[in-house]
Length: 154
Image (cartoon, rainbow, N blue to C red; front, side, top):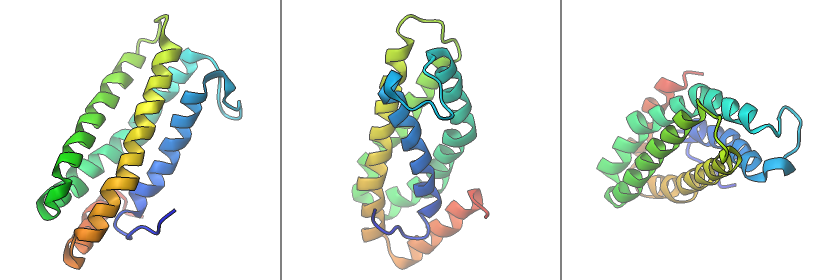
């Protein structure tokens, strides 16, 4: 894994947890059962809880602290940032549908959510973060550090 600028480390740490969830969802009944269940209704509730505890705060940090700086100071990132914001909205819509999980295609929808979440995280890790680190000035990287760490005070 590439060494991240300190401004992005809290977000990158969150990505690790998100990827664990994404992979488990994609594995379906092949996922290891340690702290997990193969029951799709249980998984749907887990995703809803994970979203509120982890993803929503993470998305808020990106949308309020990082994305505005990226769009303003690294203009080539703007289309990617717009796509990432739309993915945030799509992930949220899907989470909302898991609040009423009694649907026959739930297992498939959970796998699709896992695929979208993994794709989203990979886009940030492999495209946005390197672009921001490479093209943002030292001053903007410092500003990003200050803004991101308002959401991650420790």
